[in-house]
Length: 376
Ligand code: UDP
Image (cartoon, rainbow, N blue to C red; front, side):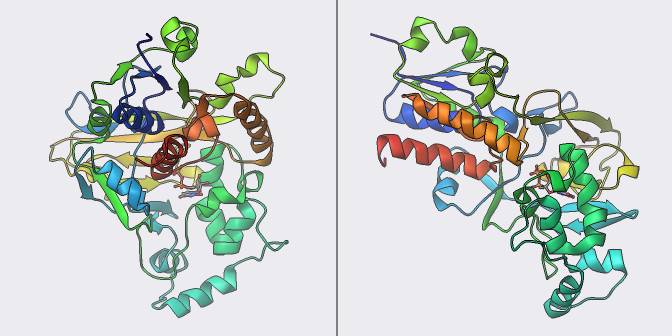
């Protein structure tokens, strides 16, 4: 008899969810994780100063999915946390998403009502040449007009993607709403919260099951042919889809991914900036996209503070798929290959080459489990 029924590749949101669900059905699950820790890019830890930080950047949980909210609450207590982001524009800090305060500060206006804001926006908005915006530039211009586009979106997008908005799908910039009131929350979802003891503890709880074995520092492709992996009846693969099909040996052009390089600094002062995240859309302020100060998320009391400057790069672990038509066409061909395989399921951001939020990753993994096994 084989030791494991299911192999899960990757111990991030998708992998941990499928491992937990199958373990609860009584299946023996082997989780293979290339890194030396669980949690995927949500992984957080106390640094050498004792400050809780996220190794791969801030993760803000928000969802409208009742089932996802119920599910994550099984593994941790959560505290309400509504995310706010400021952007440094013309030397001043303004809220992003654009709201009335943003416009008043940048244009030195005194808009007070939704009607006035709608009037302002309708005067500056640029109608896309075709009915629907066909790229990120058209999408942003249609929402906020030329001046805000130039000051807040154009160069930030270049720093983030190494592409200007016109080279990217409209969907990228449509992730951020534009508000006609003073609401300065980053997200609209009814549930916005952070796990009380951090994300790593949440994943530990999810994977703490006698039916789950986690092997860290283990690359699936090194052990793929071993008997214990071959004998599993199902594989859930949450790694990059091009790695699975080994782009180096295929005829496909390489899929583009973006990664982040973090510059960590701990300062001998209680706080560095007034907000958890400050975006730097102006190229004159530096090549980094944003500065994150972790103590604002955790409300940890500590005489020092740790900040990170984030530089988005082409090198390094894949974080973001780059959404444009060429990459979509390549990934679609990979997905067609993936569909031909039986008992291998591709889950999560990297395996689907899709820019999922955390809650969508939980949702997709739960939905996949229900599709295969029925409701439990
Ligand atoms: N964006 C921008 N300026 C900002 C924040 C975002 O131009 O100050 C653009 C940028 O292209 C980014 C996209 O909007 O990739 C979506 O932003 P979001 O915050 O959703 O990106 P995330 O940080 O989640 O990757």
